[in-house]
Image 1 (tube, rainbow, N blue to C red):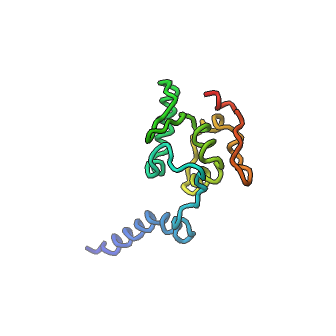
Image 2: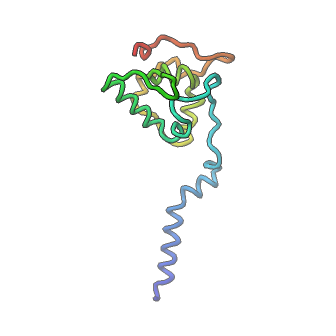
Image 3: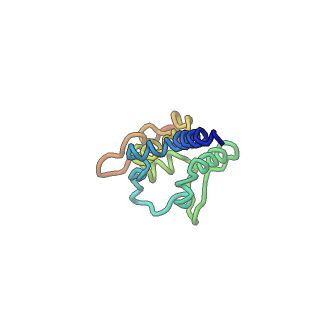
Length: 146
């Protein structure tokens, strides 16, 4: 029982180390509010429920990749609407035309990176912000042939 002080001190140090990231974020001001994302103006629904897209959009994109590449399935139906299975042609060209104000802002906040395949398979024109007062102009880039 003489080690009670050492045990309590060890537990205090352990709890401090384990909870340090949370305390650091609170002190830094991060973690309080997620970034304000530029939402699509003309669309009322996504290719899946919004709650699913917030938590599992990468699973959807991986499933799309597998369907398109391995099973030659090129369309996705949700709520009676048919969408092309194409990140550039569907998501980035039709809805989220400013990748920096939507995808990149949330990924930076979360500290994650998109998959390396987007280094080549995203139309470079869509990586630039949309012109002021209008939507991004489709370019007919290499991903449009899918």
